[in-house]
Length: 223
Image 1 (spheres, one colour):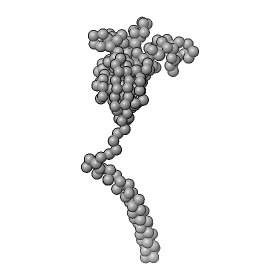
Image 2 (image 1 turned 90 degrees about the vertical axis):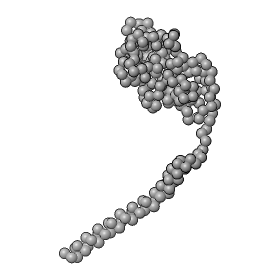
Image 3 (image 1 turned 120 degrees about the horizontal axis):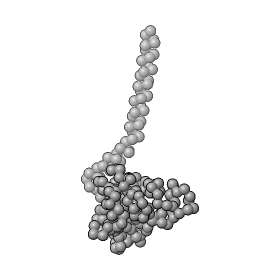
């Protein structure tokens, strides 16, 4: 029995030695990376200078006015509108292109402004909610949203309205959607078409049926 116990002790000791050696090796391999991370953290804490951002000039027409900006090339169109031009009607929702609150119309096409860089739109014509209408002279789509109570908290409303205006433009141009019965025929303004085309704009308050009514009203068909 003593021989067996001694043998088991030797086996356990050997296993411990292997584990200890492995841990030491892993620690040694990780040390350079840890040192680099600590140096980076120290630089940020002490305010050591970092590489300056790459800047670029961009010119575009926004709501009928020419604008020229010098921007960090990483600036999104959404941040250029809100932070640099103070057009805060365009909302930052998810900032991942999933909610549609930041929808604007660029060269006649609706886009999520959080997913595109401002410098990509040199020479573009951009319309935000501020460019569609004013409190004194509402755009028909804005007036319809008011008449049909197409909003509650209102946060998504600017994106909803810009998207709705562009969606009707798509239908007029004959652009089909995933629910168009005949891709070769001109699409019609139906609840199914509107729900599909507006599916990228999320309303947390759930005013979807009223939004469809508002768009249908503007399209000139009975809701």
